[in-house]
Length: 302
Length: 324
Image 1: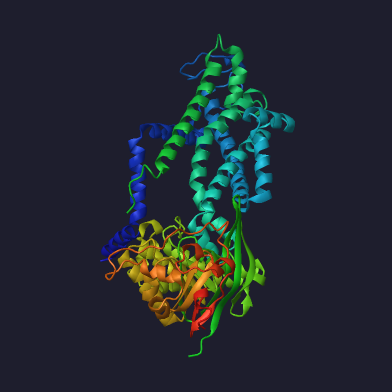
Image 2: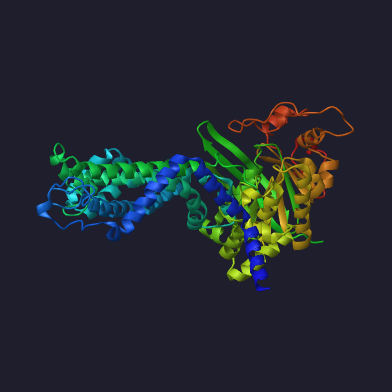
């Protein structure tokens, strides 16, 4: 009796949400059809798991020095060898995943809201507000991103926090522009006119009608940028402007390891490989998400 | 029956400042709509019907500008009111509008029920529970079968007719005194068209809503409206009761429009010669004179005034100047 009721409840829930369920199923179908997306997803998932469980996975502490085991060749004890201070490279790479992801997430957490806010306002109100915001964005975009990030980073002082601020400052114009472009096209659509005919305030139209429609484009862009952010952060650390020793940062590891490239190749190579793999994974995932969210690829909706 | 005046438009002039010059979209339009009336506004594309509607809502968009005139709604001159005040107290509360393409007029990322709910909560202070109940009631009022199901669906899952009903329900949620319907049936196929029109007609009869129907289809007006206004190139050329205007059209343009409807009697299609004038440089005097078969010299010189040739039947044409 009870079982029957609960089953009824489940079927009725299924019926009510039929379109959402079929949407999710379709997404899985499209993911399955694109092997590169799966590879990207696998890399990123592994990265996330490794970053979260780093203390349990890493065989050694990433900062404790063992000067007696300096520059050890990869072996059973140290799978990827040790660096010039005798620290296990595998452990440092594992901890480095968390550092890279943290930088990426914080930069996006600053840039997405900031870019969306400025872009929405510029696009919706237009006029001089638009001019001011977008011209400032143009100034930021006029410089090569890494050079600008380096300049800001150098001015603020070399540490991890300032690196994130520097990268965030160079990235926001991208999102502002994108949000503005979307807003410009959405605000001309009929349902905005209908909303105005209902007497809605500008704030309500922006938040309720325009923001949700900008979101998909911005999310895709953000996923494509995740790799870039990690790459730039690694570059900054490599140049000595980002993470400072003994932080297990990949860029820093490559930087300090490059003196040993000829004779102890494993010291800079493995962290470099970690950067490569991560950026590659994010790019694959970003491309995949873009393709999957493309309405042209989806079947006609019922 | 004493008619109570709801909306009066006096000498409304709207210009659009474009690169090519000033488009004189409305050239002193006069219009009176009574409470509880189903008023039809007919005219060709670009004659200023929709501009009139947006002027009433105070939503004339750049580069358009209301030059002069009065829009008196329930005794208040909307053109003298503060814009923010109009948004808060008039638009959405007293006057709402439904659009030509219903599917495009609904927010694609919010489900149908939620949209009506939003409109309800934004305009009236009621609880979410009450608003939910009211949403379903509204959907029922516009003859939507299975309102609970439709409320959970998204606009893209609806047919044009269904979407238009949802739109009507949304616009009725605040019990407006005036509902402007801007070509509500143009994008729908004929059988659905009839259903939506019947629905609108019922609303006028049951809820005492006043509707201003904008259309280019004279037959739609003939079927549904009480009174009709015919516009040509930014001028109101004829207004009157529907049977007066349809059965004894006085203005040459209205006559031309009626003749252009394909019918059993005349197998041949009769068209109005010429084409709609460029409103950057509109014809002098009566804007219809270059296409008019009865044009006289005076038509080129002066703009004809509205004349009451029968009770409630007004025509702006020099042909009737002396007969009065």
